[in-house]
Amino acid sequence: MADAANVLEVRDLQVKLKTANGSAPLLDPVQLTLKKGQVFGLVGESGCGKTVTCNALLRLLHPRRMEVSGSVCLNGLELSTLPDEQMRRIRGKDVGFIMQNPMNAFTPVYTIGSQFVETLRTHTQMSKAEAREQAIAALADMNLPDPAKLMKRYPFQLSGGQLQRVMIAVSMCLRPALVIADEPTTALDVVNQLNVLRELDRLRKEHGTSILLISHDLGVISQMADEVAVMQKGRIIEQADVYQLFDHPRHEYTRMLLNARPRMTLGH
Ligand SMILES: Nc1ncnc2c1ncn2[C@@H]1O[C@H](COP(=O)(O)OP(=O)(O)OP(=O)(O)O)[C@@H](O)[C@H]1O
Image 1: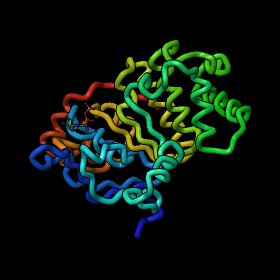
Image 2: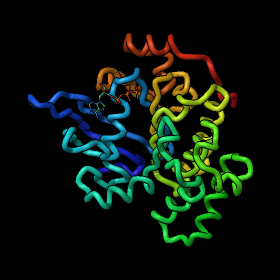
Image 3: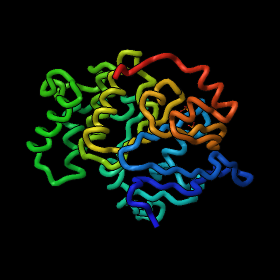
Image 4: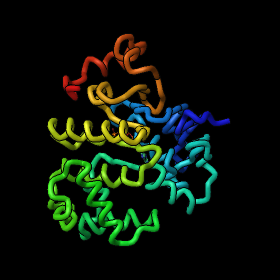
C-alpha cells in the first residue's frame, strides 16, 4: 500500500540490455522513495546508470532493446502497467523532465513561444491566448528579461543558461508532482549553474514539487538535496540523509566523490 507522504516509490527497478546471446544487466534492482517536497539526489560518475534509471522510471527505454522490471508508483498510481497513452499524459503533466542539454529539448525550427504554448495546450484545455499569457508569466517567474520578446525567439538565439531556465519554466508550469532533473546545470558556467539551482529550489519551496536531481557533482547535490543515493556501476551503494552522507560517508567510493567536489555555495 502506497504511503500518502511519498510522491514516488520505486521497488526492484531493474534494467537489462538485450543482446544477441541473452541479456546484460545495466541496472541492479533499485529501491527509491521520494517524499513530497523533497529533493532526492542521485549521484555517481559518468556511465554508472543515472540516466538509465530516469528513463526506466518514465518508461522511455526501448522495449526491444531493454528489459525493464519492477514497480514505479507515482502518487499511488502504478506506472509500469499503464497503457502507453496514459503514460504519455503523465510525462510532461505529472512528471516534468529537465535534461542536461536544453538545446535537445526544443525543436530548432519553432519559436520558444510556439513550443511553450503547444506544451500547455497538449495537457490542458487552455485557449491559445490563455496559454500564451501563462507562458509569458512562467518565463517572467524564472527572471527571464522581456518574456514577450523571448517568446518570438528561436532556441539557438538564447544562451545555454537562458534556455535552461526556459526549460525549467516549461517543466514546472503544469505544476507536476515530480520533476526529474538530469544534470540540469552540467552544460552551464558556474554563475548560471547557481542561478538555475536557485530558481529550482525556489520553485520547489513555492509549489512543494519533489525533485529527483541527478548529478555527477556532489557539490551541486550538497546544496540542494535532502536525501542522497550514490550509484556505482548500475547499483546504489549508499543512501542516506544529506548531512549523514557528507559527515559520515560509509563507502570508499562516496569518500572519493566527496573529496573531488568543487566548492560552491548558493549563499542562503
Ligand atoms: N541505449 C543504450 N544501449 C546500450 N547501452 C546503453 C544504452 N543507454 C545506456 N547504456 C549503457 O548503460 C550504462 C549507464 O548509462 P547512463 O547513461 O545511465 O549513465 P549516466 O550515469 O547517466 O552517465 P552520464 O553522467 O555520462 O550521463 C552505460 O554503460 C551505458 O553505456
